[in-house]
Image (cartoon, rainbow, N blue to C red; front, side, top):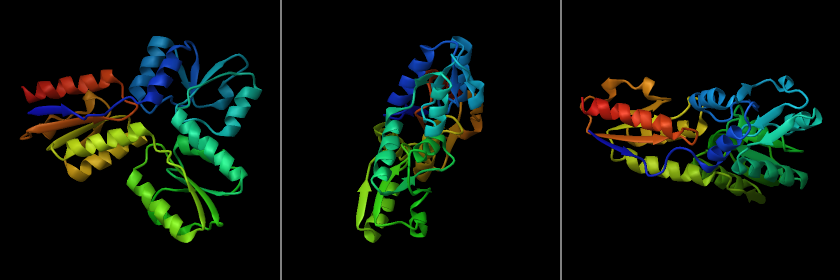
Length: 277
């Protein structure tokens, strides 16, 4: 069986930056999971004593709080600073940008539309920067239910599919006189999605590696499944089922932006062993 990795996959710039920041701040704690990958979070805890806390009140004066790549709500960031916590911001710059846009445009009187998952930490953070009307939608079909004023500004979750975002923008443009559109989907997302789309069209089995809560990994899996029905989302080599590869000739592999190389290497090695067993 042939095994091929996607042309673009794995750690993005923002995740690499956040991991480096965490490693440089030993004996600290991240506020919320730094990235959506439990195995990498365990490595940071074991090798660098970087703990994980999801309780804002656990941070006391002098503690070091590393802010997750997805960012946190503006009010919570203010509280940490007020309590004299040493705040180390590992928010991805691609996430900081929509935060700034939402704040600026809402201050100018625009209604804000955010395309994304309202329950996702990135969107919770971005939404908190609005000072006026703000609406979060998860699909183009939801546009019709919005009650918006004439001036609208639109941003997207960094890991969303560009095709869906384009549909949302088109619908808003058809019904509103002034629509300000900001392309906040990050380049790494584009590259990884394009690469998995190309590979899935050649493969008869696809393995997508990443955290179960990782939005961008879920998107990769969804795209892969469009072209290769036998596509599987796994977190590590422990999730691999040998039956997936029976009678298969071409296995494609991709990985989400929060998936470290050491996990990807382990998956490739195990599949290679199965292929040559």
